[in-house]
Amino acid sequence: MPKLLPIVVLASGNGSNFQALIDAIREGKLAAEIRGLITDNVQAPALERARRAGIPSHVAIPDGDRTAYAQQLQSILDPIAPALICLAGFMRILAPSFIAAYRGRIMNIHPSLLPQFPGLHAVAQALAAGARETGCTVHWVDEGIDTGPIILQERVPILAGDTVVSLTERIHTAEHRIYPEAMRHCLESIIAKK
Ligand code: GRF
Image (cartoon, protein in one colour):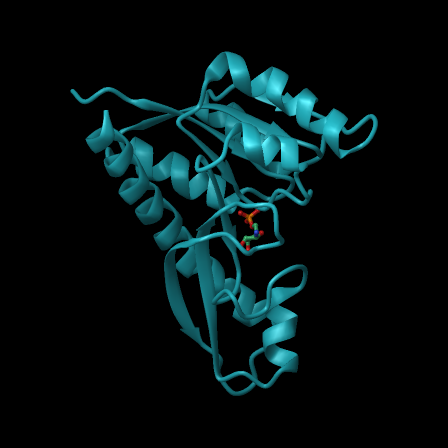
């Protein structure tokens, strides 16, 4: 039995990507154990997903500036010493001190083919631009907004008559494939370096 690497997921909302990671681990596809969910939203459905999966959850509401919030998050994360921190719809910009503390260990998923359409409302941006395809990207997190090195992408065609709702749904399906797959690559490279 390979050693399971500890990971922590940060999510603000529904948490369907969090669920995709839970499911992939349950199916034995990832040598990882989710040791915690951190959310900034007491009403996040992700909390119920954590409860059902028996994953400890932490609600961390900002009470100060970004640097103070980084310290708040670090006080939860440091005792766990996660090999990877996975942002899955976490709607906050993290302080440079946080990025520095966990550099090369923070992953994010974004609903476009980065570097196209970074930031908020990426699906609406793609539709407004008249793009013929968009997709999703798993990338490392650096100090920029959705600028870190790309780990994995999947293309999603934009169909005639697509709306934000229909396109978001197809992008989510792709996201649920690539997030576990990207994590598998990253875990393998961590294990290979040990
Ligand atoms: C996803 O589209 C992800 O790309 C973006 O936020 C959304 C989160 O969805 N960063 P969910 O909460 O995982 O369902």
